[in-house]
Length: 229
Ligand SMILES: [Zn+2]
Image (cartoon, rainbow, N blue to C red; front, side, top):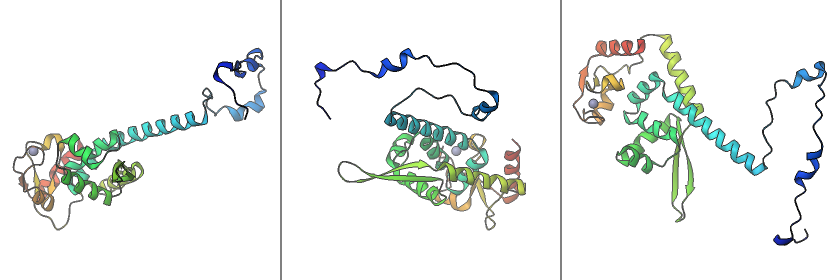
């Protein structure tokens, strides 16, 4: 490669060649053009690096939108709250915005990092979240959590197909006592099995009020009512 100095740069030749040549506007014959109708219009030319950045950004945006859309599913929110705990939907909504460390989620939600870790690990067991591991500048491993949209979607599909199979909610068979917070139920539609309520000391994780106990029939009735809404 010959060396050039900045001061003596020749005018770039990029613009000169094509400018004079107008694109010919002759119409292709109809028979041959049909195949090309489906291809989208080409965007302006970007360098390979720029293209990669644009594609990565669009993909990320698309994934973000998809996560947000999936998390609107009420059956899923109910299901994950029952199985992982009431923090789960909040954590997922944080991760839907962008990937985060457990500590970032904890400070965002103002919740103890151990509780966040516990929920993340449980959700990792369902494969609906995953993490990337990187090293920071001190050599510490950094776990950035994000939503696994593919798994989340198939998980939701599974819940919904189970729901349509029977209107009877899928309650744990060995559990006869269920719990709800009367104050938060209308917003959160959360009913907890015994084990989950026990872990939180039978007090609501959102407002701190003691849970109300429900028998199985009352629980089924509430589930069916929620499913109709
Ligand atoms: Zn409450």
